[in-house]
Image (cartoon, rainbow, N blue to C red):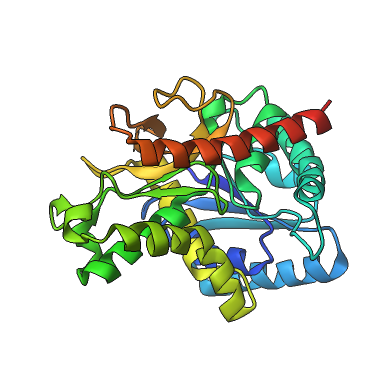
Length: 331
């Protein structure tokens, strides 16, 4: 018996990440090869943007994906979120030259407050929400705060791109295939304070720090590379990551919905409440997690050395500052 279609909403769907992501969703790579989808594509209610969105809709129709059972393109957030089973939030107010962090948070707080309220009233009560638009962790916190009818564990922010970048850099440094690498972790914020941790990573079954016996490379090259990779791609392409971001979004949703492989963890930014690593409750903070049955679980019991603790605390402090700012804005 065929599965019932799920409604998948993508915000900012006329942009370059949306264009790169939609083939993953339509082909079954994201939600499974036997899972039909009805797409709800949302973008700004501006004539030029809606014209471009309609072009994307036409291309999806022309691609004749068997799993696509309908496509809605709209500039109305309420319409887009109605009945949604999964929402991937690409859209956010971009940082502009000269803009202070607080200004960016204020602009996005208004957007994600409104969208959180729509999620609260018209989306499926089991909706899974992934926030990608930056500052992703705190935008996710804003939406979650404004959607009290939806369980907090149904909200997450994307750090899978950073996680995938860490895999790639370890494989390149060790000159091994990607499948030989396991276990890197992204802790904290999707920002330049994130902590890419290889303390528990392995390469060809051996500790990564033994295979790559070069602490200067780890602290002076690897960590800054992962933290600043997005900026490096913008400098090279004059555009933000799209191909790799789409892959990471698809990976994130696939593993969340369908489960992580046995013995493997991934990095997801999720509600920190009740964690065993001393991170303050009430943040959207990236942890190592496993997924099963549509639910994530933080991996407990990993040893944390002083170096890691300091890095984890620094990114926690940034998230606490951002939370304080948006809490004031939401009053």
